[in-house]
Amino acid sequence: MKKQKERAVRYFAVFLVFMLICTIVSRGIYAWQMPQVTLGTIDANTLTRTIEADGTILTKEEVPVVTGAGFLVEKVCVVEGQKVEKGDVLFQVERSDLEKLLQQADMQIQAEEKKLAELNASGNSAINRASQDLKDAAASADGDVARAQEAYQAAAALRDSAPSEEEYKQKAYKQDAEYQSLYKASQKKNATKKEKEAFRSYKESLDARLSESYAQEKQALNDAVSEKEQALREADKSRSDSVKQAQRTLEDAKTGDGGAKLEQQNQIQLLKENRSGMLTLKQSEGKVVCSMSGYVSRILVQAGERTGDASAMVLSNADGEKLFQAVLPGEEKSYVTPNDKMNISFSGSAEQLFGIPIEAVGELADGSCQVTGRLLNTTAQIGETGKMEIDKEIGRYSCTIPLSALHSQDNSDYVWIVEEKQTILGTELTARKQKVKVIDRDESYAALEEGSLTEDEKFIVESDKEIKDKARVRLTEE
Image (tube, rainbow, N blue to C red; front, side, top):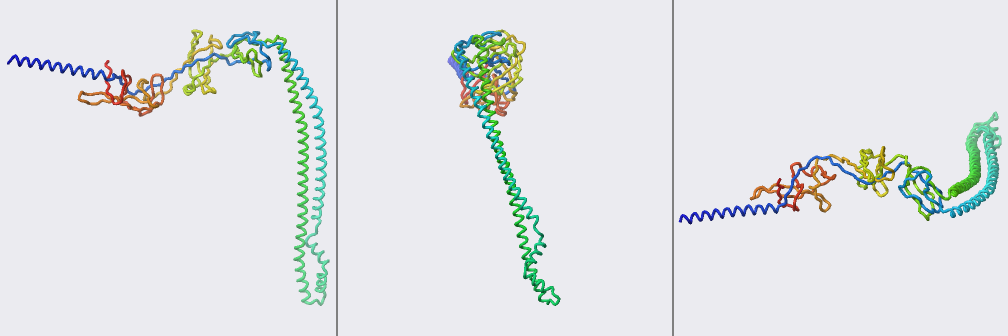
């Protein structure tokens, strides 16, 4: 019996050990299946943006090579970026074609000089006609004004010589038979009261009629003067307008003639200058040579083509001020400002330049950003290429996270927040997706909108497995 109990105890002990081992193994498998994560919290950081771009050394002093239009290029003797010295042949024009152009220029100059002679002849005739028209217009208008002046003066004289109202009435009294009869009756020695009253009554009535008649006649005289005065003003204005129009016609004749002649003279002068250039080119056997020491910046003509009105080539002065110019994507423009410092390295040499200030920031037609800096004390040559780098502080933010903690989906950004949860197995960590708003970023950190995360919230910076929402995670063992 005792042996059976001991055996039972041993079996139970073995069973407990086996269960312990199973528990440990199952916990290990459970934990192994969880993503191992590294946690972090928000921190204040200064974001820095590194901007890189390729560029070329240019010069401020560029000189165009202009030969005139229409020359047939036989061959181009240089390539872009080539160093050239004074007297080097840049390109050559076809000489037989140049002879034809000279002959055509002579014929065109003769034709234009003939046109100028015709303009001189016709122009004088037009000016003479316009001058005579001005004289005729002035004479006719002067006559109209004189006649209007005479009429005005006559009306004014008639108005001024008119009698006063009292004189007007006295004259009417003498011509009125009834007035005279009643007056005599009232003035005799034995005149009755009735006769005197008859005269007084008639005189009052007559005076009223005469006053009204006098006012009407006076107004008629004033109206006549005003009418003649208005006619005089209109005659003056008509004279001024007609003379002014005739003067303009004369000026137009002179200006039109002079303008046409000046234009024709300029045309002839231009043709002669072009011909002079052709002669110079002929004397050099059609060779266009370099006038200075420098570099070929741009070639704008090709063999078999004719030169245009613009320059055929552009040369850079070897002794001119050197510039480094690079083009950045348009989205980088907001990060670059004048006086920012750039470091430059050159592909063709070990030379490096540090702290070169940016002098200009411009926008090109395609929306890209062009930056330019001035180079001093450098052995790099015009046309040489290099790479620029700018480290620009773009702002200090109190809420930043490592870029490894930031994730994107459906045009929105989010982080995994880790929360503690109590279970029968103890304290466990659970991942929860939380959307955030990014306001800026650099190569290492993203700045979040203030309040996106608190200082107490922990987020996943790194994980060895894919994380799902509400999934359990475990910390990476150090």
